[in-house]
Length: 295
Ligand SMILES: C[S@@+](CC[C@H](N)C(=O)[O-])C[C@H]1O[C@@H](n2cnc3c(N)ncnc32)[C@H](O)[C@@H]1O
Image (cartoon, rainbow, N blue to C red):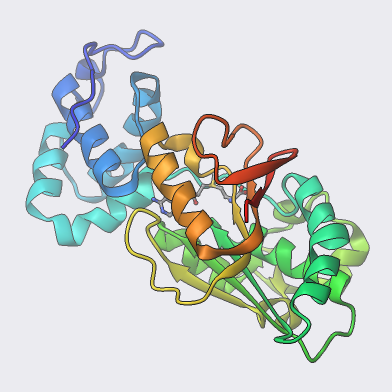
């Protein structure tokens, strides 16, 4: 197991976590950071101490424990039971519909028209949203395909949506969003693609994704660091704002695997603060964090 260089008991903001309501020592944080890295690839530097404290405290309260040391021993001896909760607690799931709009514009105006010619014999399109969080990304892909394909009803179009966090995968499958999540979506898209429902928790209104958007998407839990069960190759992979939490070695392994599972000249879209520069040379840059596999 990799040992992180964690020296300070205080956080970067000067908080001494040993004196908090639920004390957390260096050793506890180092243990948590090492398990996170080993199981998910996520790197937790010292600047993440505040975030980890607030997220793991929820687990400590739920389990009626008193200290981080108790939680670490609980995690050690109840791996099968607690690891899923631990992983769900440490992932960052920030997302939105049509986040980084230019990727969807490019998909609509360049990629789909090209695939309609390139794949005309098989009439199939395969897209993977890797690290899909609560589903806004794959549903945005589906809305884009809907627009770009028009009535190409004979086409077999599939979007695989995967994430490591079981809570977000369930949310994506359910496909119900509170009104705030739809802020910024043009009203005509909301009208066409969502129906108003009462929120499953009974707290006000929500929006349910229409069946025509759902029908091409399959949601599954998948750890990107583990084996991938998919057999076929993809035309496009979205892996946006995921590898930002990984170190360069893990990124290199992952991007090489993406190159292997993409069709020749397949597309890879990554997040706005991510780059393949200095990580892999198996893709050519198209600008704006869009890449194409070299043939
Ligand atoms: C910030 S969200 C990005 C969501 C979406 N792609 C976007 O850009 O809006 C990052 C997602 O990556 C997922 N993730 C982190 N490590 C992962 C791993 N090892 N395997 C699969 N998913 C992972 C997290 O659970 C989280 O939902």
